[in-house]
Image (tube, rainbow over the protein chains, first blue to last red):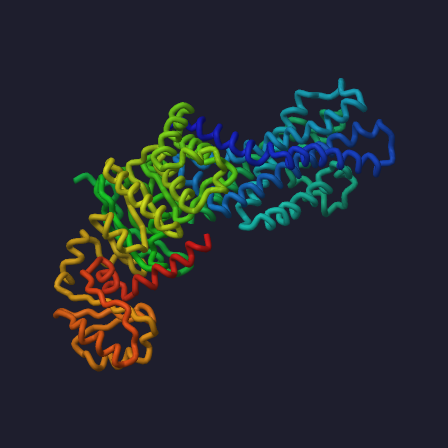
Amino acid sequence: MNLWIAFWNILIKDMRTYYLKPPNISWGIIFPLAWTGMFFIRSGSGVEAIESLLPGVMSVSILFGTTSMLAVTVTFEKKNRSFERLLLAPVPFEILMLAKTGGAIVFGAANAFVPVIMAAFLMDLSRVDWIALVPVVFLIATASAFLGLFIAVAVSEVFEAQTFSNFFRFPMIFLCGLFFPIAKLPVFLKPLSYMLPLTYGADILHGAVHGGNSMPLALDFAMLGAFCVFLFAASLRNIKRRWIL
Amino acid sequence: MTEALRIQNLAKQFAGVQAVAGISFSVNQGELFGFLGPNGAGKTTTINMLTGLARPDEGTIRIGGINCTENIRGAQHLIGVVPDESNLYPELTGFENLCFCAALYGLGKSERQNRAHQLLEVFSLTQSGNRKFAGYSKGMKRKLTIAAGIIHRPDILFLDEPTTGIDVASARQVRTLIADLHQSGTTIFLTTHYIEEAERLCRRVAIIVSGRIVAVDTVEALLQPIQEKQVLRISCMNPLGPMQKELVDSFPNLEFTFPEPNLARVESSQRVPAGVLVRFLEEHGAEVLEARRMRPSLEDVFVRITGLEAEVMRKEKEKKGAGQ
């Protein structure tokens, strides 16, 4: 059987029915815009602050866009039983879940580039290391999508998915070094920072945008990749345990 | 005859409750097999295990010779599933839903579009093919769900309560479609609470009660022991409540059941004296509407085996179906 046909059609179906709907497109534009404005005003600095704010706004845009959408769409399909259609198809779980998360990854990555486009009008982007920036955007989107999947498997109602997502997202924003340097965090919180995927993603983004990374990029990429593998494997294991009774 | 499906000692427990307790039976290729049982008997759990939505605790399942307990994905391209609730995508049109389901089985673009058009025509849905599934009536939803179940031309089709909660005309159409599918050689595993539907469509049936198979045979063989039985059904305008005890006491040779307050079912190995009974009821204040002699049916076999009135089971299910 041609698995590529199944994979591609699940991805396209999700993009059309969930991610390319006008409310989501406007969310994808307004949300990063609001974050940019908020941090810009809060920082009290001039246009030069954009360079240091950009990695944070990009990360937050990816994290919120991706985790919310995936956790909600999967929970919704599980609740109305249309997810059973996928489980009944002769498609390996790995392919099935990669297709389901694929749409969210593309959506998250697209969200990340909204603040970049806005920044292009206000700062010089010629120093940006695009070779590091583009892959890390997709890696952060992948880790966030798998986190969303992990959340979706753990809940049964759509509202629970939102609440549970925030339980992970808000601590992650403040502990990953995006807005407060990890070095300035209390000692007991530092180990927690290094247990978050966004810490490594944010570090690469800082490095790519203004050369301010605190860890070697190779280590950051390796850790972020490891988180993706771990979250995906854990989600698959939980799906098999919780949904295939 | 080649077996399409064979299950042996299949068992499943949920939180200490034995949902299915070591059941075994087989379904032949091209057969329309009925699977009957009251609510909570283990029908859906069995279907879920057969289709890969649940893992058996014990036992083996073979579909088309493939050991599904080891490799369910290997057998899933051979099966089509029509669940008891329509589970297609509300935001897609009928045509898009069929194309999407075909894609899940790896059908190429032109093949899935042709097949979708063909099925929309067979199921009389061509006019509504471009409408969103969310706007379909219950009967149309049910027909499209069946079409989605056979889009990839499965060898064996699992139909779970296909006519529950739909109007009479749609139910009749669905039954005709099931019969046509069977005629075309598809093996069908049918779960239904409409016992007369199973009797009309299936050659063989299995009856499951409390997770155990209590009978597997042809409809004729199951009817054999009660063929000689005489059955009279008396329906009245008013409830029989006060007269029930008097009836039972006055006719000790007859066997009475009261499926509804104004309905009496009388069974006997000898001819039931309809005139005498009607007179007796009228003298005791009943307004008799009808007294009809019935031929013994699969329903009688079901009632005898399960101890549950089919009428009661049907109403429970219909209540559930209406809520969908």
